[in-house]
Structures are given as structure tokens and as C-alpha cells.
Length: 168
Image (cartoon, rainbow, N blue to C red; front, top):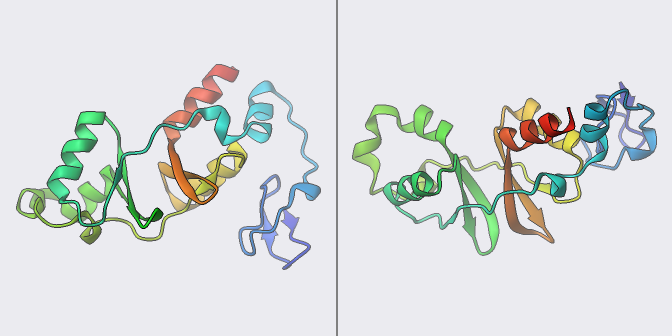
């Protein structure tokens, strides 16, 4: 475990930032990658994953339209944006768990009624290990990627698996 020198929180060795105060912990990293896969996960950044262009929708967009656009683009999530800021995310999991068999009756309602509001985001220069850590802790399969505070892409667990497979 790595103790944050700023707040004292115990973090998992190798994380880029403290989970509590989000201060950089890069100076504490003493782990050395033993394989090319480990090196890739620890050293490569999210920009190396080539994040996919996000499907961006407004909070007022009808759920039926969002689902149709997700299917047309063959994507598992839509990023809900208000005033150029991420307001939420709507995923396949939201569809299954929040709507389920009632979905046909709810297609005219705004996506904001069903989106996940607390959205974790990452920056293009964050490490892949940091993305894996956030995804694992939060149970996420998709994370929006920001650049200078604006949504620029989205990564999924599939992006990371492809990157790891290429490193093998």
C-alpha cells in the first residue's frame, strides 16, 4: 500500500493519484513492470487507446432517440452533456437495470430521468492503470475522456483489453 503524503490515505501501490484527495502519487511509485503487458498498463496513457468519439446527447433528448442512436452507432453508452459539461452517462446497464421491461412505455421521457448522474471522467494523459483502477472500483465499463474540461472521447473495458492483447 502507498500512503498519500498529503492526506495520509492508504492507496493501492501504483495508482497515479490519491483516491481521497486526488493528489499525484507518481513520486511514490516504486513498482517496476516485469512484462511488456505490465509496462504497457503502467506507462501508456489513455491517448494510446485512441478513445472513441462519444455519442453526445442533451439531457432533454427522448430515451427512444438515445437508444436508436446507440444502436445505429453500435455503442454501449451515451454521454449526456449540458452547457459543454458532462451531466451524466446513459449505458446499456442503465437500460437493463432501470428500465427493463418497462422501456417501451418510457421511450418519450428524457434521458436525464434515467442517466447515471455521478460520472467519473479521465484526462487523455492519465495512465491506463489509473483507468483500470477507477473502472474496477466503480464497476464501470465506460469512462468519458476529457481534454481541457471538454468531452473528447470515451473508453470502454474493451479498449483496454485490445491494448493489452496487442502488448502480448
